[in-house]
Length: 336
Image 1 (cartoon, rainbow, N blue to C red):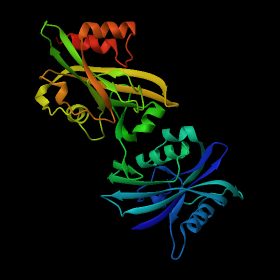
Image 2: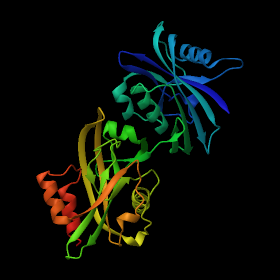
Image 3: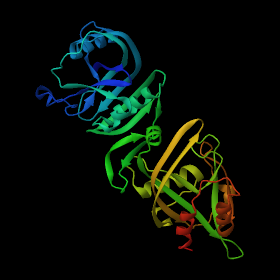
Image 4: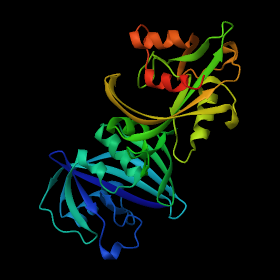
């Protein structure tokens, strides 16, 4: 296992970044990417000593205040496993020199994410920007692509970031950053419907848990969620039905309605939540007994049947706390 350090020197809301583009680093995995400064621990060297030495060697600056931010383990199918000590430097002395590994630039923190970064770096840079306490992170790569991420022992949700036209942006981001930065991503919405004894169409509505990061306690689609990185639309829809409601469905049970783009900003639990999603909408018509459903407690507080017309009227008149769009209701109505 390789032991390394990585440091981000701070000044006036900026980080000092290294564009690793030196010809001598052409075979380095980070060639062409923007990173902090750092390197391998030498024999008998502590992580702090390594961090200070690397900052001095690569920038000419002497680190005065070195703040540990976390430990990051990189696992790859192409490169040796790396155990990295992550730091920020908030006070330093001396003048900045040149670096033989690439070019050094001071970059505004809010502009960093537009650069060519490792996907995992985006995650820990977001945590650092949010002043997260000291963290332990594990990043698992297949080639250059981030496949899994664990933060403090819990698996993080990773999404494929999309362009507004629905084509891939070709990088992966973690859920909290996706909604903090307002990145386009893909979701699935599954409407469970039935015909009642009076011949009226009814919708199964879920009431979102009070702990949800957006629209807590609101009535919503029967089941919905994000499409995880590497997951197909159908796989995501079947998974959400199973996880949220306990419905074990097959691909043939899903009736596609179409896609719809949604843009929404709100503040929940004192945090800004920016949603830009490309939703894939489905109908599920098989019989469902709500008494036999297994609701995911962390996501769903309860469910209820509601006649379609009454539901649409309640949404239009805003007589029920909800996060349902009439445009989506009108799309599924065409399938009745």
